[in-house]
Figure: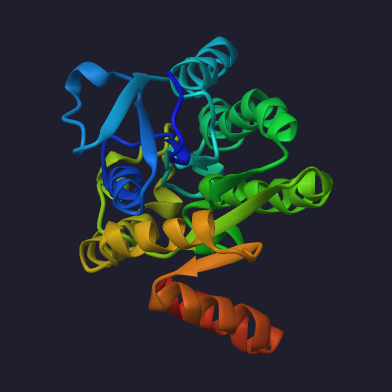
Length: 271
């Protein structure tokens, strides 16, 4: 089967930002394939085809991309949304925990890019949209491993974009701030908790719980993803929501000392 409509593949589309993005892309005129690690538990948004995918596995990534091409004849947009969080001070997170986060958030993106890029290059067109975060360009105490994974995605995406533009393909970044999803509740806690960090970690957890609850609706981020997917002249990066826009401006414009104090105040750290 082939289609004349553009086709988008959205990873991690069973809930939150991914689900909202899949629905928004359908509304924008795309045929959309969403993925989840277990589609038997998914109620697909109207118009979205679902496939099983584990971005932590090379074979799974390759197979899903081929399934979409076989079914629809094309992939115009890949949205790398699947990701996991991790809370706790850097010293409290084991290397094994960090490796698990990077295997999904960073290497998962790389697997999907490796799988889809030959097809996009051959067609001379395509967009790869990688979900980053404001912590991809800001420090985030008590989320150091997660922030490091998003910093990695920023560097990877910017470098990749320069490599593939000549083939008519772009790699773009979408950077949300706090979004009203299950992120905080579903993020693992440190496997080596230390009493010296306990009080500050609990304070950070309370702050995150409130921030997520009061955060942007996933539809706000989904709208930005559609813009990145359809803009005639796309930008390298798109902040999503007013808080993300303010955070980006702060990072660019504030003197180093002011910026440092603001980060400490925001995270309720002394000094």
